[in-house]
Length: 99
Ligand SMILES: [Zn+2]
Image 1 (cartoon, rainbow, N blue to C red):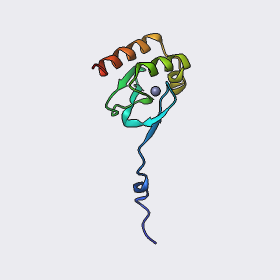
Image 2 (tube, rainbow, N blue to C red):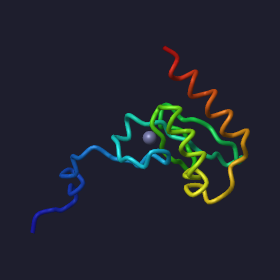
Image 3 (tube, rainbow, N blue to C red):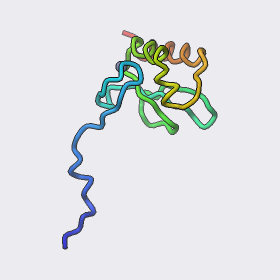
Image 4 (tube, rainbow, N blue to C red):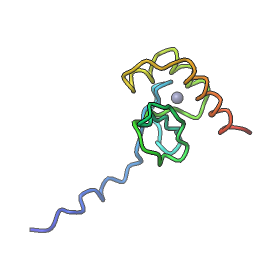
């Protein structure tokens, strides 16, 4: 019998994630991760490398405001999200997307 150790190799598809705002599935690389740290802080994780529980958003303030309205983030994190968190996310997002 041949070894089956490398079965993950066939999984070549791009990892897709659902935006908590518009609910669309997109390539995770095109998205912004919102994470909750162990200190219960919410951060935008542009690099995707920070630790913490994460949710994904398109890099679009539209999606952030949708997530606010449909409580997508709250569902993802299973807790209520204070308004100031959205304010911070919006501010960080506009800094990230500065054109
Ligand atoms: Zn979106």
